[in-house]
Amino acid sequence: MEVRPGRYVNIDFTDFVVHNGVNYAARPEESAALTQGQVGPELFRVICTFSTLNQITQSELPDPTEDSAGFIPAGSPVFRMKGWPEACRLAAKYDGRWVVYVATIDTPQASTFNECGLDPIRWADDKRP
Image (cartoon, rainbow, N blue to C red; front, side, top):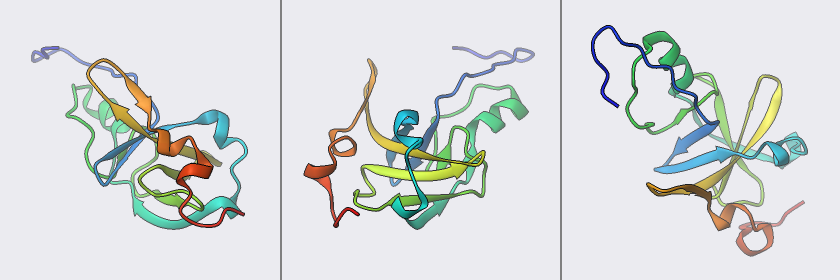
């Protein structure tokens, strides 16, 4: 999409996080059951919130950057999840609720969840509670 001067772009973002070159997408159906006890140590803080950046600039944005997010406010912590490799699942709390983020495999045709973020037995890297 070409953006010309005087034209504005509003983008409808998905709920995502980028960390260590991995894209993660929210899994709302799993987030409802997430408890503080399942959350591990803080990994990073969000540097850029793309939905906010788009609201401010109303311009087409570059691809998401390292430690950016679709909706989590800049400065908010993102955590590792106990029992999961960090390359597979992360968690963050915003708007008063925990959200589970699962690694995705992105191609020009589609974005799908990475199997490592879906199978807790096969990919667990520590003892699950």
